[in-house]
Image (cartoon, rainbow, N blue to C red; front, side, top):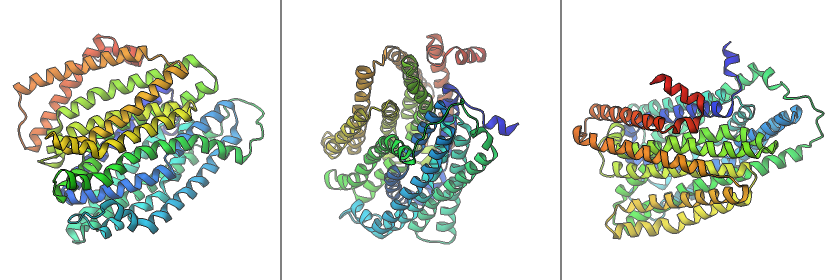
Length: 547
């Protein structure tokens, strides 16, 4: 019974919620661990962890970023056409390609880690050393041998609309990773008294071990449910499709996705090579303070942005096979409906969440990391970058699914150019205006993602006649509901101040304000029929019953 339940196929909205829930749980686990991890390795260790992870994400974008969605898209396409044998060859070829790409990236990182570390720090001294950065970069590179193959399995399941196993695999991966990060770094640093770099290295090793456990789970699930993958969608005479044709299709589908993640990782890479040096040379920050701020942008505050990104990722993963099927069938009305629905759902979930996290940034920072001179101000503004990353990602993937690769590249390149041009410039401008200099860096990211997002919307509207009138109406209702929620919370702030450094008190404040804000927002959007309009009658009826 359990096996059949787990392997049940999911509709678009149902699959979206399952996928999003799994990703959100995974990201929440990824946030919880930072409390003990921060107390173990501190800000300097956080910066070291951030350097290695940024390099890792950069090369992961080259080796496997586009694989899961490309596999999902191609498998879904052949499944819809009834090409059973071709579909299985896609899976086999996908594994071979991912193994090769992972191996190439791994060897490159191992050989050139010292040069990468030198490029990160430049001539800045007084913080983490070149040798320490080289060491942690090499440790994290091991994961690149495992994650690409894991991504193929996830894409294969999702292409068949089995969203539960990939979601569970993400949770397994994160649980194993978190346990190794916490206990591995603690034992290494506090029990055996090894160096900070060794402690961070063990924590980074958790990515490899977590991915391995996740991979084994999906292998077992596929073997146990092999019959479900053998079911033919319909009986047809399959045409002869060569491996070359399949590889070409995978490359065509995955290349834009790889570029998407590559350009997204460039945002982090630009920060990695400019923030510390820029704050030291142009804003008179000490090296210690500059690395502290960078650690917040790359590691500590970035964890909360991942909550917002997980929502968009869940929507995207469930949208791809469903939208692909509509494209194959040339169902323009269905394409219109799914794109606008996905965007409306994303706006509905992320806008109030962004405002709430920003409002409670000081309380959240104290709970997770303790008091800080920079933390609350970084989180309070940086969370808006997370909002625009999610919006940008959802629309860029939509364009890619519609095979508008020219539009994808124009949008990506435009955003990165904005980021590169404005990053150091805005840092200096904000410093001269007596505003936090690092706000300039965050603003550059927001403007870059916003530029890409707007370009995507324009292309979808002009080229594909996607009418965003209903989404615009939803956006107005969502903003009004969010503003109303924030007004009530600001009034409540005068009744129940939260100026305390006590963690338990701040947990109480976060829960109380979170529940009140959520209830206000749900009631408002229920009264205005926004929930019903976005999610449909079934979910609206669910909320009505709960009230």
